[in-house]
Image 1 (spheres, rainbow, N blue to C red):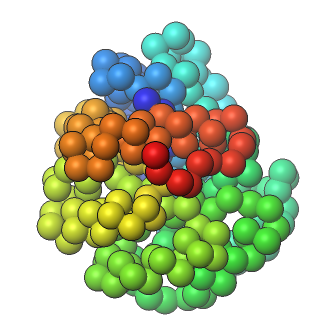
Image 2 (cartoon, rainbow, N blue to C red):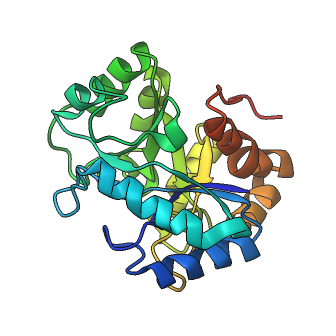
Length: 244
């Protein structure tokens, strides 16, 4: 399996606090059957802006050296959406933003309240510019989860949706689980990732969600969301949206 969203980079946000914590997370992920992961620190978040790209790269290289062959790691970021996002994306490949594994995929965090620019417009602009916007954990964004039908238009505009493994299993509550069910029932989910922050409360584990999806929607769907589509991101190619 491939985990596209995990807060493995130490000392930069609410994820791994120190290198030792990050190493334990990587070891747990590997033991769970994850072969590759993307370290995705917050960027443009009010608490964790992480605008110094060189610092993030240096921390990642230290983590990569320490992890060794335990887990294949890439660097990306969970990037907060706001009115200034498009201007910063226009600076790429320069600037501070980190696409997933140096690809055309951007992992985007929708604000928890309905403020700021319409995410449909942002998704549309990114898609026509050749980017592949991935919305992180939409089932845990209250105003999206309460109206899951609103996610249909986002997908139509070009968004790809990443569900959190613990939402799929019900560990994040009924609303998140019901939103995941709606998205899976309607073929609107494209990735499942751990959004891991530690080894206990929010661990880098995908196997439980794999089993839930395999039992409810078939093993081919589970493989596509945890293996095939995430691998396409690492290889910077289009995903398969149809479900066998």
